[in-house]
Length: 496
Image (cartoon, rainbow, N blue to C red; front, top):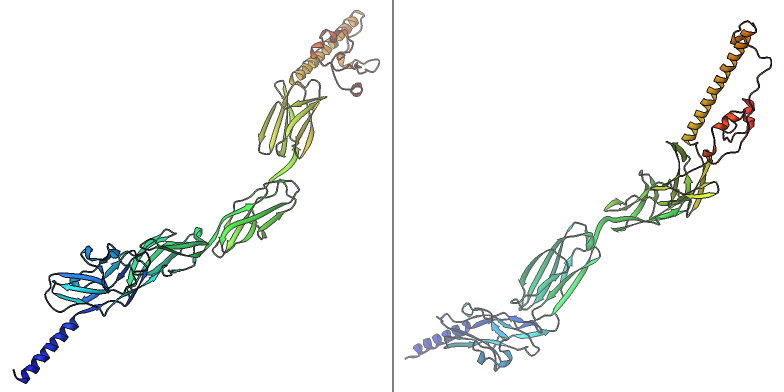
């Protein structure tokens, strides 16, 4: 072989060797970050010469130790069960996962490929180290912190990690619609993001919205932000002492739940503006004081409270239409009292204090009814009292219907008797005149020799028992009314 042939042969050998060496390549980061106790994935892709391959064997080594081999017995005990090739070697993916990352797992590590057991290559020049961190990286948290009630709120919680096989788990303190997405970063890092969407409510105001992240291996990290929700006033109410004595001063206070804080107005039941401010003072209250309500106002709206009517307490007042009445021979007296609290009603008849026969209560009105034997008493006193005072009123007792009938019948009988006597006297005189030969005279022209005097009636004491009155007494006394019980003075009849 001449010199020229040797030169060509040497050039071909060198070219083939150069071409073969440049075909064995690998793409790995020089360093990845890993969370202790979690897992880490070393991303890896490789290349080999353009040859036909049937069997691929991937190996990861750390200098003289094998940290991963498909045959577990070839792996050092420390890494057995903790390492795994995730990629498909036939597709040139040689990514390695190490679980339960320990402080001693820092490396460096390199990849070796064996093709059909004949073509082999170790990528010594492309080593990877693992940088250990004891705690997760800070969480990125974003949410609009000031919203209006009912507004849609979107919150974003993101973390970086190095274990895409087991991405972090997100837990929100608020219910809503959640979306998860992951993004590949550089140097074996990944970004996981959870998005929460919900409609704000006043109950969310001043409450922290929390995002808790749990990493593979159990470590957690939590972050939160407080949301401010603007809403119209709610729970508007009037605080007051419900019971107040008539004539005293009442202090009322309006309260509400609102953001921003409310201003307040006071209105009468008819809507008239009474005052502005959180408190309202009612002086000299009475049972006739009108009801009021308050209105809470802020930039989100205005809401009114329910109407408030003070429970004014006052001493008894006996109504002037209280009276005694008689029906069918029964006399009863009704004493009608206005008071708060309700009154006790009694009656005084003579020197006796009597309880009401019946008591009816309707709101502030108490009606006491007395039904008893009133005897000859013409007046009865009604007494009412409660914790604030007392009142009394004198009621007239009407005559019993039966006695009135007796008086009317007796009067009619007396009148009838007088007429009979007059007729008898006239008849006697007429007879005498005729026997003496005196001419007849008309009764209408008869004159008396002396003027007529009104009868004088004897005054008697009141009999308490009407059964003691005897009819035959009327006829044995010159005076027709001699034994009738009466309370009228004799002087009354002298003017008849």
